[in-house]
Length: 168
Image (cartoon, rainbow, N blue to C red; front, top):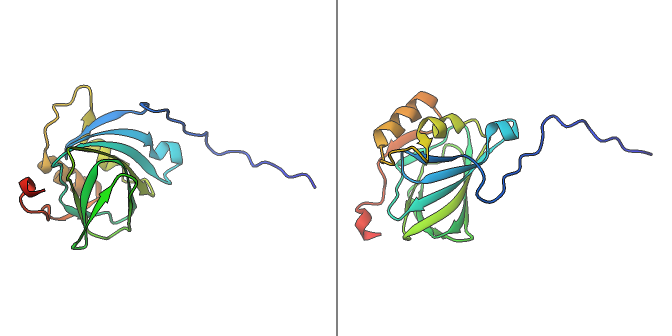
């Protein structure tokens, strides 16, 4: 019995190393889009995040998306619902939607893949960033809070829970 191949609804998305739009995120760091909502028909988004030591996020959650971090290089300290853990190269954290979390980069630099499923939070990252080649590269948590409120993709519930960053 011959099988039939379904007609594809979209084309494959392929990004080689170094490919993908690079953006300076107002929360700190340069990310490179690896898979956008358009690439995945909204199923997910993925970006590679280049981070400097001391980069920190406020405590927040994603109401409509699960978030996964896969560490490629370096180390972060994660706070997930008040519990802290260290995540190093090769480590993964899968954070369900509505679970408060934050992280701080504890190594001199770090590089990770960030994946959100589904990918409809992309507007937050686009609106809270600028093209890397022209960005001022200033950390602006007021912009982050404003864009979070406008898009609803993240809900900020408090400041970074790590105390004095000099201790990390």
